[in-house]
Image (cartoon, rainbow, N blue to C red; front, side, top):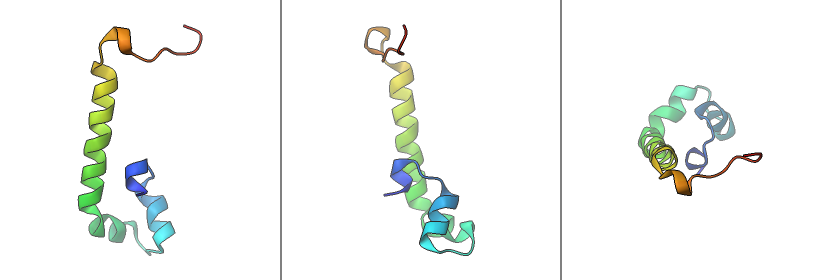
Length: 60
């Protein structure tokens, strides 16, 4: 849940009580990969979205 909400591995490791971040990344590597793929898809959708549907920045 934390990985899918963009929380970093270090913070998650501390939250879970792991002594080393590598423990967290080893255990949850499959989850990290899926979360990164979702993030990449989201970024691509925003960047590649047609100009007329892009979000406007306040002040534009």
